[in-house]
Length: 379
Image (cartoon, rainbow, N blue to C red; front, side, top):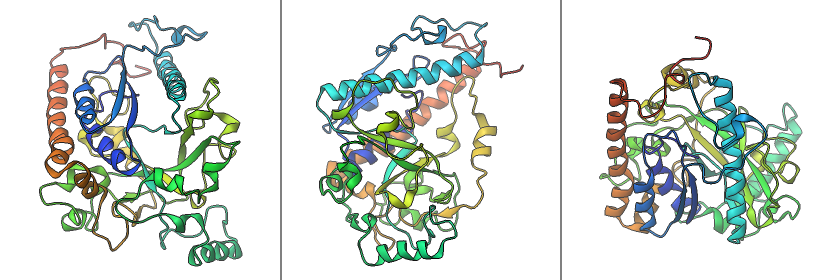
């Protein structure tokens, strides 16, 4: 599901085209969006991506509550609680329809993430400390480190070459989680990357390994390297083998198949996983939304106020000393000029368009009934 995320789409699409490699995508567009993602998605269709765009809640399935009905009307009397519940319900019915649709297409592993989230190889970093399950158990920590050093741990099986993909790793059958017939849903840990520039992630450092015609500061995955520690995880995000989806309702988008997902909840011990999800706050230009935005600048600043930040040494390059990034590989796959058009140039155009939308709305050119939405709860 997306809503006015056009600035984020080019990088997200190019990254996952390279790293997964993403070739089949279903996008649900929020009816209250002010921008149209179809031109961007059509452009990616030109490099072989099969993309379906679902609009006007075409996937909707009515529930019992009033806000769960497709014909539910948003008026000045609609409270924010109902709007929030409707948003969450829309996510669930979209994911359910999406999983069923891909099941019918006989697809397999399908990633469920937002446009500010990126699936990354969970390369081991010497600075990350002991696994979260060890806590203060010194023996546990030593045993884990030994499994890394002797190459027996699954994380040591990850390919660090620029051409490595998630699909190829799954096909190697070195991670037993992907072969567990009882768990067609795997939850990956998710970690927040803040909007912080520093001497270690600016200028020549973030540009290293990137063609000079690309401006690395326009790519969140290249620009931002400060994240929460691996012991400060968010609710995880799933990958689902849709060939085994049984059509059930989804109660939780973080753990959509319930007991058919790995773990006992949506919080994950990262050290046990081959992959993890990177969640980028991004720049203010990409974070802001037109009209009433419950997040706003205050929320942007609050979310960036994260303690115990660490510099992620495993991304964006495939090795700490390497000079290759996912963007380098993307340019090799589609050609440099095409890569520039599909990422940097497209992002710049979308940022200008968003500026225009926000300016027009500031003049009162409302595209929807925003009277209620422009009133914050309690006011």
